[in-house]
Length: 156
Image 1 (tube, rainbow, N blue to C red):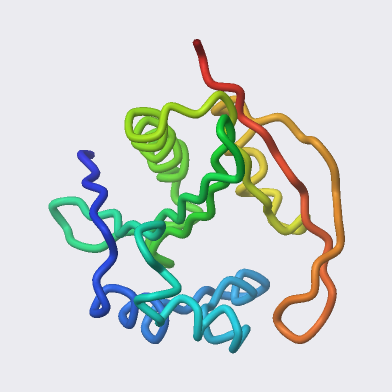
Image 2: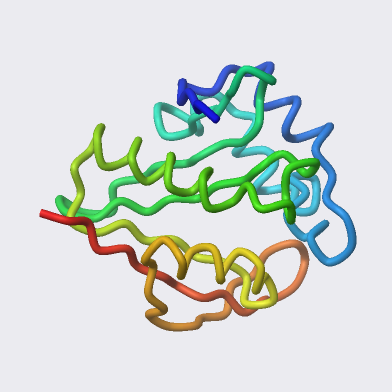
């Protein structure tokens, strides 16, 4: 499948925020689960140039947030349409995102953080080459959750 990365529009942000709902424990990733995150996601100024919609011939299928943390590192966040998760689409999706980040920003390392309960995503990240760095606690969604920081070392 061919993926296209474009700066997220307001319409795309609203579709993700209000129409994408995940099942079971993955509802943790619903945008409406944390009002602070929701407000930031919906604010075009806060999004700036760091949030990208990912589309295919079938329409909007995901998003990538891309933030330079220093001169050699980019931190990413991502999400796939709920209808596509858990069906073997993650590997291709994350690989496309890594290619996009590397071709546009040329970082030495790419980092991400994932809730430790999300073993499904952690396995995909490990398959593409991310390594576990450390766990940490973060307040979100009205409570405190454990997250895993992972790093991908780009080829020179």
